[in-house]
Length: 457
Image 1: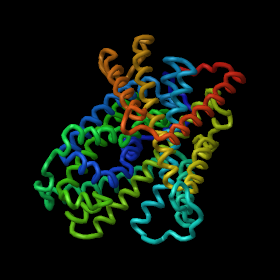
Image 2 (image 1 turned 120 degrees about the vertical axis):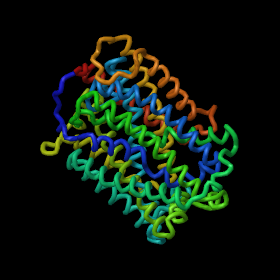
Image 3 (image 1 turned 60 degrees about the horizontal axis):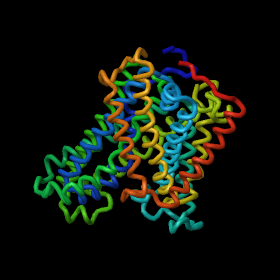
């Protein structure tokens, strides 16, 4: 694999870990902990995260091998193209771009929503309603200004984005450790009883949520050409970041379970914030934890803007999207037009309200797990097709990791289909269909104009 790249290799180990861990630790641990513990119990929730985390680790191992073997920006696009050709590559990358765009757009809506917890009543200037959600002028402007700032930060260079990511991630970890230590000293084991609620049904109700909380490690392969590390270390750091996220979620669930009894969990909207207030002795602790959650929104937003823009760039470089999207900034060496495209989508997102963004995120979740299954398939194909390929990080001797990752990924895909209780709504299928139609049009156009473009290996 050539070390040549148009990008600036500036990301070190700490930058990469902060990028991936910050992507995985978003706002979900603040808002979902109470629901999950109520459904499955403290022990059941921790077990669910252990099982869900193991599944993501297996998928991550396939990514780790491929990322170290083909350290090129675009990640999934590169792996599937080499394994299965242009059609499979377009299908996979277009699917994961939907996921990235959906997260970036949702964070622009989550930011003003969470700000209400810190500054109650700041919403003024009702403009209209979308699907029952009232859109206020000041609320939308917070999201729009945030989106402009995040887009500007990303254009300024991946190192600036990584520094921002690292600072916020350290603050999130610090607040999380305060909650965990506080619960050990001031929480009660009695609050965790019964450890399991609802049997395996309760555990499964949490398992289906866990993979989507772990989404984000895959931004590492997207920015591989900007990582200044031995290629083998890229794979190792990817797995380390997933293990850190698994440990984080399990410990946060344990701390929240020790801090709040069943009645308190049933009454709370933000369980981890109330848990911090309970074990650290003041409302200041709850507000500090909400601020950490706000930081999680920013780190997730930042990481997925990085990942999404690199995926768009890779497709444009391969002549699968309009060529202007492959432009790099002359000074900062960032894919400026790809960043502006995804940034523009996040800037308009708050104008559609929260409910519309929930639909988009659900549709995007399907895109992400479809891409996971394609990467697992690429892993299997390349093990057979190119057994002699240099693999600085090797995930096992045989292709079994790929088969396990493929089965688990397809299992996640099934969760979105009508046979599952978590199936997409009709309007969400419309979004998936519309995105697919736009993708088919782009693919047909690119094949007609450019033919098949071979990637550099």
